[in-house]
Image (spheres, rainbow, N blue to C red):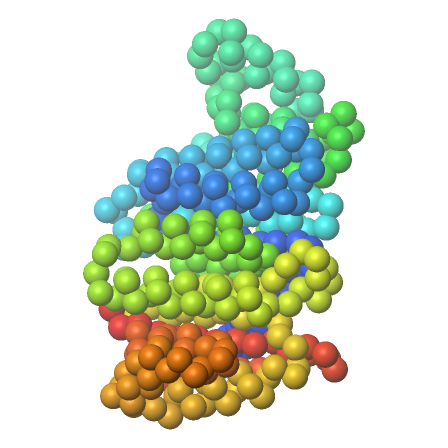
Length: 377
């Protein structure tokens, strides 16, 4: 899975998008985690589980591991709060063929690395029956003995996944390390579970590389998958909950609405057309601006129309944009407002500078369309 992703603005969207096969999905959030945000993240992930997972028992196991992973990030985040300039954590859920991967990452004080590693090694040293017995002993005694020092959460993650817990510590500086924890949940019957050995797999290396890339590009949120109305509403809710209600945040929100709706209306799913629009959206933020990027497949015969409308909108200055926008709204003779570029005009009015865009021809039928805009903070 690991591939060196192109870092130019328009290339990044397609390279992130093609990481996920048709029918799979990937959702990644980076940043500070709050209880409210955690609930919204779980809501978005749960809506996708209901779509992709037809067994309630599997849904429950995946959901439990998501909850436990997010709680771990929040707990560690509280410990490092105000002690470092960047206490961002990461949460990722991926559907890859016949398995689901839950990955979390967060800063941890170096003095706690050895202790946490011992606990994880302890859990991974036990087989399924031993984990079950240890869990039962802890519940019956009501306390964590030396043998049960690993904690109920880690024990249950191993039990419910049927796999060893995969983890890694990446040295940051003399005080901090970044702790990654990954759980693999196979989409097979619970009765078929067999605890597997853990090793640093390509999927873990991939997430570590991706986290580094997203950090360098100041990307907070990335959603790669199906853009149905439930997913769109959840993404909007997450962003709205993260931003103060200032002028810049409102512009970001309105542009995001337009981008997500465009994917929903125009995006194509090459592998499974019946699954609806597939695409990618990611939001970045640096000291000066927010950067919004969206990408999806469109049919080749639509490329020229999109390009002409975007070029026309980018040629207008602020005064002309307002005049043209009002003219379209008032002109009763406009048969199809979609063909006027009204959405593009609205985005231009709210963003700083021109709309950047790109069309990458994929085959004789489809191209990958990327659009990007910025909003000054």
